[in-house]
Length: 119
Image (cartoon, rainbow, N blue to C red; front, side, top):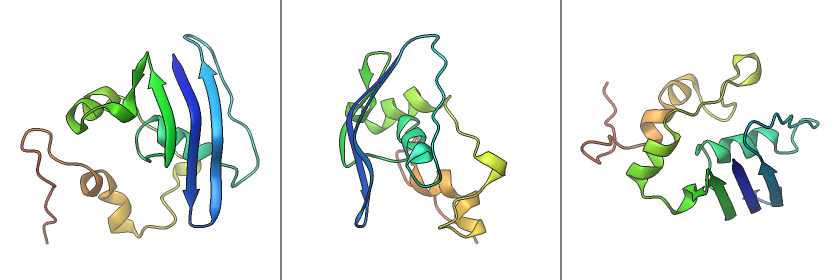
């Protein structure tokens, strides 16, 4: 079960998610539909932990994932993923940044140190 309450995300002056509320029940099939730029992918990125909201709560199976420590959060979402339509990359990142996205945004869970860039 996923419960989203008052989720808010802003990029610069653009409000993308404005106090969004959503309940997805166990075994429910849900379609997120809308024109380009209305926040569909941003919502999914929040649910799987790629993005952090400016405010609001995200509960998955009665656990508020935003309250978890970094290690517990990783353990909680490590089996989640997102496949972008048409195998798209992040358009704001170059190829190196896209390939290394996970490593640059996470720490080694054993050492708790950021991954180092090797050249």
